[in-house]
Length: 192
Image 1 (cartoon, rainbow, N blue to C red):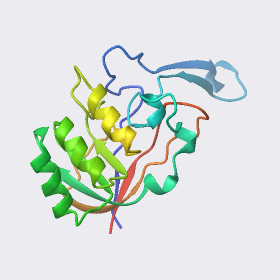
Image 2 (image 1 turned 60 degrees about the vertical axis):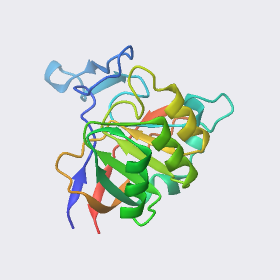
Image 3 (image 1 turned 180 degrees about the vertical axis):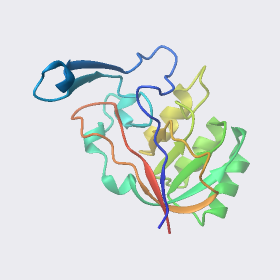
């Protein structure tokens, strides 16, 4: 069984413009006579590979700890698109995937508002993409509101360059951060 780690390394990760970069602080080290190596981490919940919860854009939306793990673990389909994902592209992806409920988009792709509506109306449980935001970087609000409003979970900042197009088993459980709008996760795919 082949396993693909599709997670960015956190301290060298791409950061959405305006978000703080992750920082590591060393507390003690064995090399300096500490009894152990110990560090702390400061990060934004949307650094690196992460999950967006509906609460990210809706005050009454589910927080990260309220999202069912069924949406984050299970069969998925990896599609490949460069540029804007149109409504026609979204329909083609759903048809190729046999209406799979978890879709990962490989490539330098931005989900358009029209494609978001297609995915939301199809009951898509999860959309994953390689960018730090699923929608346009200069105006991500509308796409996020359509998808998160339909309780489609967003898995952003994944890395799929070594993953061929096709069906896989996805595990993308976020850290269990009560009441938060998002959380980093370790996302992996396995061949089926």
